[in-house]
Image (cartoon, rainbow, N blue to C red):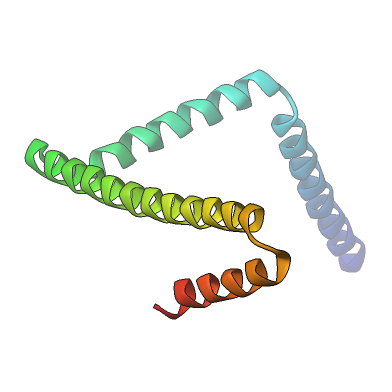
Length: 120
């Protein structure tokens, strides 16, 4: 008889745990909008907390960094402009050379110009 009570107690515990898990699943699926609202609220709360942790730069630091960026952009722009103009000049000379001389002399001149350009 005690075994039947133990089984019954075990069965009762199992039924309770099954019921609790079923209730938990039902509760999680109960209202999508409430869950979504809680998630959004938690996101913005965490976001606000993270924004408070940020060390914002001073105005002087921002100005100095902006000036450095502008100077570097100007220097890189000038370098690219110089390379572009140099290559355009070489192409113009090659076209003029090919129009004025025969093909053999043009090929020799082209080879000479290319070797001068890359060896310097």
